Amino acid sequence: MAGGATTEGGDPWVLYSQLALADPTSWTSAQRALVAIGGLRTEVNNGGFDQYFFNSAGNLAEHAVAAALANGEPALADLVRRAMAVLGNGYTPDWTTRQDVVVELDPSAFAALDAEFYDLEAASDLDDLMRHLAAAVSP
Image 1: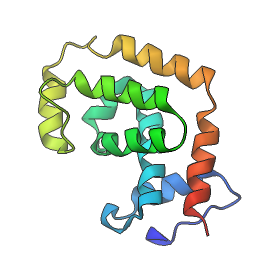
Image 2 (image 1 turned 90 degrees about the horizontal axis):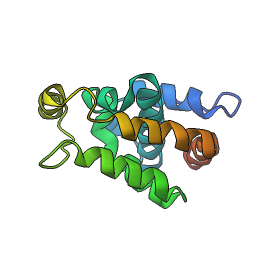
Image 3 (image 1 turned 120 degrees about the vertical axis):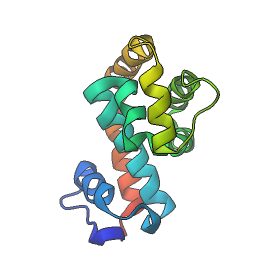
């Protein structure tokens, strides 16, 4: 496992935290999916999509969409896609380029999508998604 990550008691957030510190080039596709969803949830819950796309977690937005779709969360995938569209001429996984776009946006550009994300968090069991993704990483 990348960076010697373990599940320590089966907590997907422990595994996410360990993997998030590892070299992304060493991640398996299952590890990347867990980090993508964990980063999405962490950043949006902490500061909204504005923060998500401004920070490095936003580098994995396309992977978050793919992980959500592959694991039965199409509403989450759709929401992330719509948030990516707010960035204008297309989302880029390039952190610096994306930051330049984010700082030029109206501060309220993501407000409705943030609220929709929080509603989705409350209505669905995204912790179960994290557990499922972590189980795919663990031997």
